[in-house]
Image 1 (tube, rainbow, N blue to C red):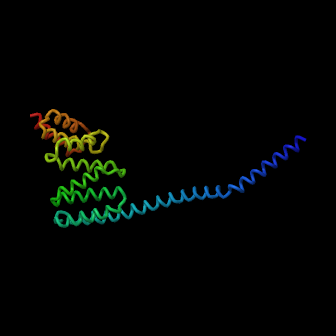
Image 2: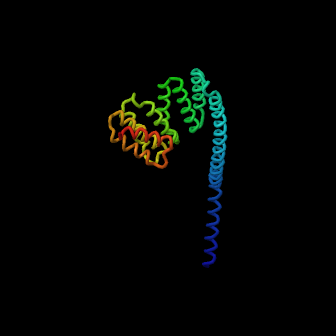
Image 3: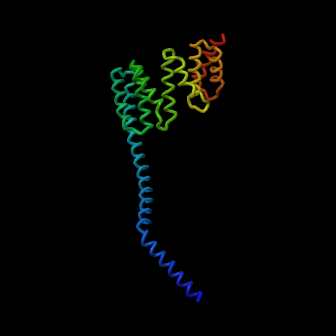
Length: 221
């Protein structure tokens, strides 16, 4: 008798399993399709981003090569036109190319004698949260350099201080700029300390090291 009961129990379990599968088969298939669609969508998104990046690179290089080809012969009006073209490109470009285009446009504004427009762009880049910290920090650095001696010292220093971290790629330049700011504020000891750090850092570019040594010699004399 126990064998009969076991067989009946097995049949019931099998029947319930079939009923369960029949009832929820659609949901299982739907879930599987959603997973496949998600994987396929992610792959398509990756491909699409790659295509966007290639297209953006082509457009960006076309603009910048044109500017480079003109060289010193570029007029101020041409600089303004090129800056406008770069900013128009930046409106739809991926984040990295957008920031590069804005940086290049800011440089053109500066060279064309429209520093306030350049500074506004540098501040905009410096406030960006688009995942490119080195470019964001470069925006803040360029703004701080342009504002030395004109903007309030505390405001300039607030932009430079985070960039002076040894792990920041711009730390040597930021330290030098802060030293210049300290000299403007007659804080010679602080300036001297920063200049010594710049000259002692083996990673400091040779040109910047020589410049820092020259300024340091005037502070020490």
